[in-house]
Image 1 (cartoon, rainbow, N blue to C red):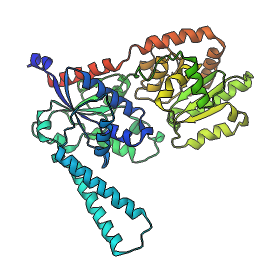
Image 2 (image 1 turned 90 degrees about the vertical axis):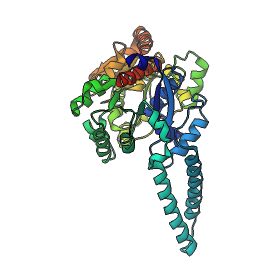
Image 3 (image 1 turned 45 degrees about the horizontal axis):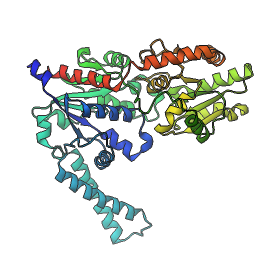
Image 4 (image 1 turned 180 degrees about the horizontal axis):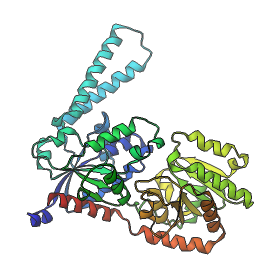
Length: 442
C-alpha cells in the first residue's frame, strides 16, 4: 500500500476562496493570498499531484475565482470541481441579483415596483446562499475520488467532513494571534471565529503550520497530536523579490514615491499596533536628533490599519519628522524589489509573526535586516540579521546607527541575507506539503 501511495499521483482538492477574494480586492493580494497562490502554482506543476480547485467561502467568491482563473496563465486548465451546470445558473442568478441591487440603489420612491424588487432580491440572495452551501454545487464524483481536501485558510465545511468516504482533510494555520494577542485585533469577533476554526479540527484531521513557532503555539494551546501537525516554511517568489541592481529602475521607484536621493530605512507592513511601527518612529526620531543626521529617511510602506492615528501622532509630535518620514501607502508588487533593494536597512520590529514574509523578502533582495527575536522570526532570520526584543529602544537605536555608519557591516549582512534567503523556496514548501499528504495517506 505504501509503495502504491508513493508511486501514484495524489488527487488533491485545494480551496482557492482566498484567490477569489484577492481578485475582487487587489489590495488584499498580500500575505495569505501570496501563500495560497504560490502553493497552488507549485502543486499544479508537480507530477505528484492531480490538482482540483474548489471555492467554499463567501457569496460572490465563486464567480470571482472563476474570473481569477481565466486571467491567470500560471494555472492553466486546472479543473474547478463545481458542476458547470450549477456554475452557469449561479452566474446568471448573480448577474440578475446585481442588476436589481443597482436598481434599488437609485432614488426609488416607495412603490409596488420597489417592494417587488426588494422581495425578489431577497429570494435571489437566499438562492445564491443555498447554492454556495449545498454539497451538490461540487462534483460529488470529484470529492469521492479525492485523496486530500486542503483548506489553506478557512475551516473545512462541515459537509465535507460528513461526506461518505471523505478524503484526508488538511487545514493550514498561520498563527494564533486571535487567541494569544487579542489586544492586537480590531474586530472583537475574530477570536471567537478563530476558536471555531480550531474547534473544527477533529482527531483524524491534519494541520499544516507555516513555522515551528506556530506549531508550538498550536500544540501548547490546544490538545492535538503533534504527529498530525506538519511544518512547511514559506518562501518569497524570486520573480517578484530579487536583488535589483538596475540603478535606473530604483531611481524611477524613488521618484514615484517621492523618496529623496539619500539613504533610507524601510519598513513594510499593515500600519497597526502589532507591527510596532510607533516604536520604530520614536527610535528614528531619537537618532537623527541626537546624532544630528540630516540625510537619513524612514519609508513606511503599507495600508493604514486600526489605531493608525497612533502612528500619525508619533510623527505629528515632532514637526521635523514630517519631512523625514514618507508614508507610501499601498505599493504594487512590481515596485517592491527596487524599493527593498534601494534601502539601507529593512527594519521590522513586529511583536509576533506566524512566519514573517517581509523580512524574508528583504533578505532575498539583499538588504540587511533588523527584526524582533520573538515567535517565528528567528527561524526566518537564522544568523543573517540583527534580532532584538521588540521593546528594546536602545538596542534598535544602536543597531540602526551601526549599520548607517559602517558600509562594510552592511555589505556583510547583505551577503548573509542573500545566503539565508536561499534556504527558503516554494519548491521546498511544496515538497514538504506533498510529503505531509503522503504521510497522511500512508
